[in-house]
Image 1 (cartoon, protein in one colour):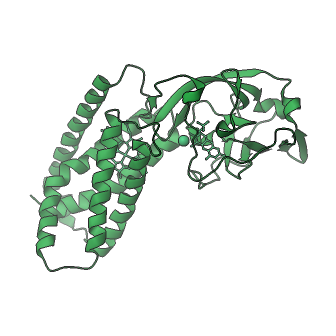
Image 2 (cartoon, helix red, strand yellow):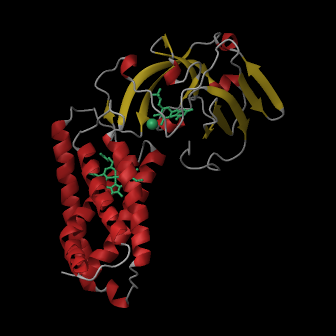
Image 3 (spheres, protein in one colour):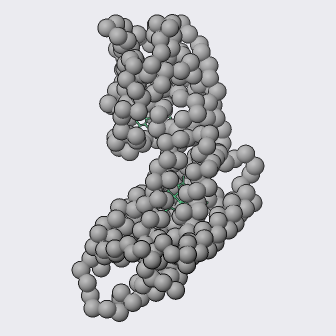
Length: 332
Ligand code: HEM
Ligand SMILES: Nc1nc2c(c(=O)[nH]1)N[C@H]1C(S)=C(S)[C@@H](COP(=O)(O)O)O[C@H]1N2
Ligand SMILES: [Mo]
């Protein structure tokens, strides 16, 4: 047993878990399954190291009181909660209707755990030594990785047994139990609130180059473009509906390429590559959107996580700015 090994490896693992979780949110589909598997292995490797680390902790607790102990305790609590909520979500405890889903609690405690780990490492500095790269260390790493891999496989088997086939996406999200519109949670990314929008005076400003045009709801009613798409919220649920309204590209010159920044009445905004799939929706499954779901107009972005689906859209800015020049996740 080697406490130094556990310390150094945990210092890498906890931030790596947060980083891989973050990448899962950015990808949203496609290769996200591979990052999800990596995230599971990294997170569960923390569990594997608990016996090693507990020796270090007990030794530390026996020593005279050092400053920073309360924060170290907080770090322990955050890591344990992140692990419990992550595994709970994996085996199917979703809490879709509660104020905070299991996964939201997981991300909150996970981000806290990663931040506290970096803080903790600064206080209890360990300087790397050349022997840290010895064969024995590599062997230990291989043992930890294999044990974590086995735990991940068990977690996936357990979740396959508790979940009906097809209900989980590769992002880890679960399908909502009901496919009715009323069952779709009205969600905010962080702090956004439903704004008061008067549909009669509402205008959508579409700016491209030096040109700008305002569209009223009546103008947009000429179209009935439809798109079946999966809304996959980072809170851990997904639901499939038919959205209808107008394809965003119709409001731009026919040859337009580049990106669009779509802004909400609340100021919430995302920039996305301009594709034919982007839809400005006024209806879901044939019924008018409710205020909570983004009335009068919200963006539908097939293949991307819910935080791109800007609600209460008031402005579209089209130009050639790269889509990645923006905060990777909204701050609002
Ligand atoms: C930004 C922070 C994080 C995000 C966005 C995040 C995201 C996720 C997601 C989406 C899942 C569900 C995966 C699935 O069910 O397929 C998950 C599971 C999990 N997470 Fe995290 N996570 C974060 C931080 C952490 C941290 C810091 C740890 C460890 C200390 C951790 C440990 C776990 C574990 C053990 C699971 C269960 C994996 C499994 O059994 O397959 N996560 N996380
Ligand atoms: N303006 C604005 N649009 C937003 C959000 C927000 O907070 N503000 N939240 C996003 C998130 S995180 C999700 S999952 C979807 C949720 O859409 P719904 O409330 O119709 O279910 O809206 C997205 N659009
Ligand atoms: Mo979301």
